Length: 140
Image 1: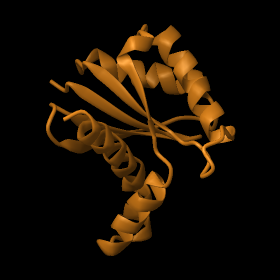
Image 2: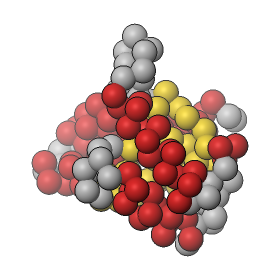
Image 3: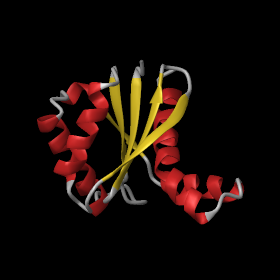
Image 4: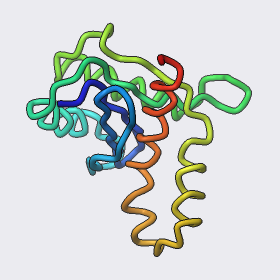
């Protein structure tokens, strides 16, 4: 049972990490048709049917200057579908500033000397883990 679910939302994938409250661990990646957030939320809804949670922590990728760009609008589009399709209340969703998270995840995977194929397969989950760990550190 996961108390917290971390999400790294992309245009074709959603990385998922889970935590029981102390440490975050990678879980899986949802693949969907590019920018089809209805499909993404339907697939995530299947994940939710098998996993309980207290909060869903979503990476909120603001621009480096703190402004809202197209990546945040993409996350908002997913969240709109999440609230409707998955029947998740807004109180259960926490948005975490995730500037550079994917870049950090990629650097960690390169440092681990993984092949490009393995890096691609794991970067979204690792980014979700970093997002979730940020939340856990802020809420000790």
